[in-house]
Image 1: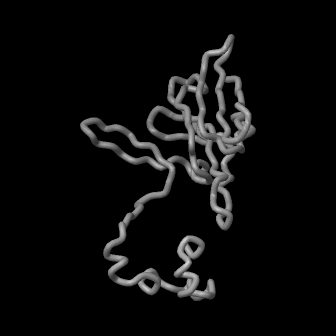
Image 2 (image 1 turned 30 degrees about the vertical axis):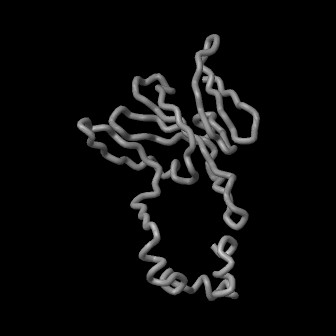
Image 3 (image 1 turned 180 degrees about the vertical axis):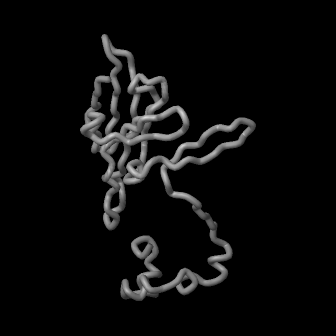
Length: 162
């Protein structure tokens, strides 16, 4: 915030003083009372199960899906067992210069069991390796196989045969 608000640099000339301050020490009561207040209850990657009549149940995806932002996913029966699976990818390289980029994702195939549970496959098991900043995934019918188009930010279109 000090980069955006010069007054904070004057109020807190040392980063340690700023770091040790509470919100109430930085902002006066009037400013805080007029500010917008937001809260977040959950930062996990999850899916919502539609129960009908506007009712949904949140289910966390496996821990392997929690390592990076998910920007794109495909829901298909990838292994041919009659149950829907999920291919997901993401990452975020556009962070500010003091914040490291979120680049721990490499694409992930989750095999579904038809009962709402998903088993993550390793890169070796699935053959999926998408380490870039993936923005979109689309499946199209190719000649003799399905083709997955992978849209990578600032990169060439990638193609996976399936």
